[in-house]
Length: 447
Image (cartoon, rainbow, N blue to C red; front, side, top):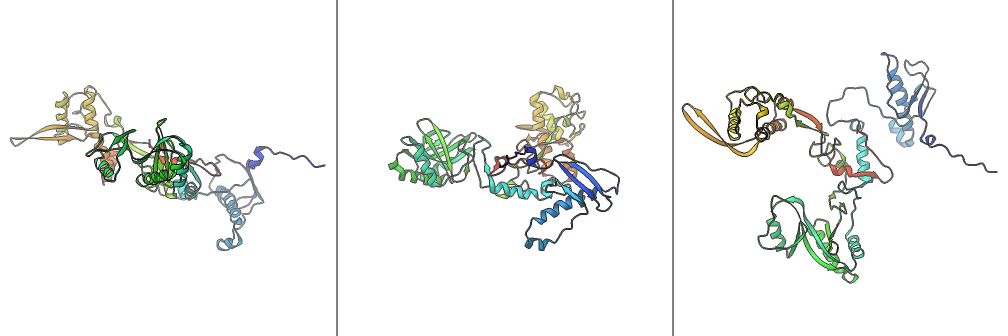
């Protein structure tokens, strides 16, 4: 009679829950038995010479490395050499191991455990070659098509519907685009879709330069049926040409827009990603680093409380810490001109200065202030804009070549987590490559 199949508990399938070392005799260890729990942070402590490193590095790590090397072929092992087995009776529950050497490393803000151990290089390669991209706007999976696939999709999805095939030119950018409209007109197109409205292209046409616009060329208006496949094909190819690999199909019946592209694109919002490469996932590369923090994960932000530590003081008494007490310098003459404009003096307590005036002092203004200067009985006046104390500190921190000036500017700033990448160091689009084809990865913070 055939025995019943025994189903093991899930925890047994994962592996042993403890790392067991039996009879360790490496260096100054004297037949030591130890059990170390897995999936926990374990610290080995003791006096100097008690065998901490002998247990951690020369026994556990050495055995893990030796077992890994044994998985190589005989051909590969001849170039590596044989690793001796540590003097130990038995080790069980040992996973693949990583060792960070006990040495002083440079305090480079771009170095992490992942980069030092080169694990990050493999993760970048994994995400570039085996990851699926998702839109950070809609959460939908990013898709890309060939021209033939796009033509097939249009023919099947919009049968007997009236559609517009559009070529996107501008996506969420400011400008008047007068030259763009003129160039489009010379290319023979009659209509464009501006911010969702179809308009005829006129001579000298332009839009509001201070507003964000979406502009598409109307390639063709078609009622879809099988007989018009050739016309659809020509319109899609023209749309791809002028839309740089992307085309937009507008359904006139329900007013919905559908995006198609040769590159990775969100089918809902229309945003697109370039093809992923390993350097796209490196925070040390301009192709992958967050543009706001340059891949550091944090930025310096001016702390107003450090600039104005005591609002009971006046400007003349040193209420603005970066300026100190009143001196006959150019900056205080500028502040006097601001005071005349807003009706306060340098002896006024900072808490009593109007909010608009205080914002002008801190952040600057496009207004022109007239400053009078008297020297040797000759008076003259200057008209200029005020930069603002906070802007001045930021510019000194970013542009100055003097270490002392940078240190001075840094004394009025705090390091905060980058608001764009939330400390992840990568561009927002890179976090959209979430899952691989076979495994789901969540990067630990130390990578």
